[in-house]
Image (cartoon, rainbow, N blue to C red; front, side):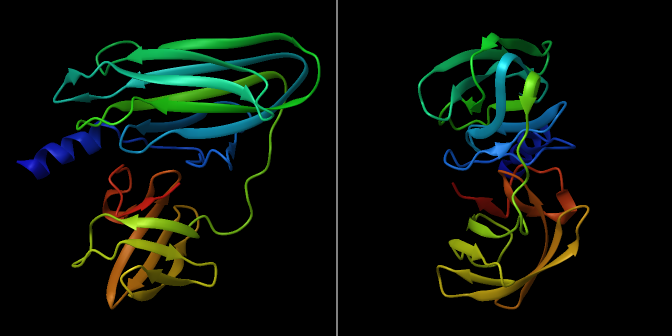
Length: 237
């Protein structure tokens, strides 16, 4: 029964396509021109984005569609916050939506920014809770705006918490730039990019072979369930 409920929750919060969002407040991900799509919930955490706006008018349009459980709306909320990187101003709006309701949306409008600024966009789900609450969202920045570049290097490089999918819990695990893997319990291994288009990796740790797909701000999920938000290795902040 627990596995069945978990499977329903995972399906409820799946997302076909996602931009490269960030879980790190000090290292937000760049928004791209047009619609930026992603999903988050209280099991995943707050997402951080940035773009450059001004001088002149800037609009940031936000859309939120909540998830559900067994066909029932959970009436989830997401809080969208805009602030400048210097921390001199901040403004927030809360959107509420359920799986059976229409998507909630709002637009932040700055009629006349005096000078160019790096603007941080924070997307925060409700905190804590035993039931996964959140959903899909979109962000579109328009007007006098410019966008940063994606970070160089392979996206798998980073620190994760191993959650499932192995015969033994190995704890905090580092995927290093040289293609090696080191776990807190002493296990070691290797990672190798299998398919760049799908971010699929072949990973071997202590003799166990895993086929994993990297999903931004979620971590590494089983390649047989690529849309899952239940990671084998959860990305750490």
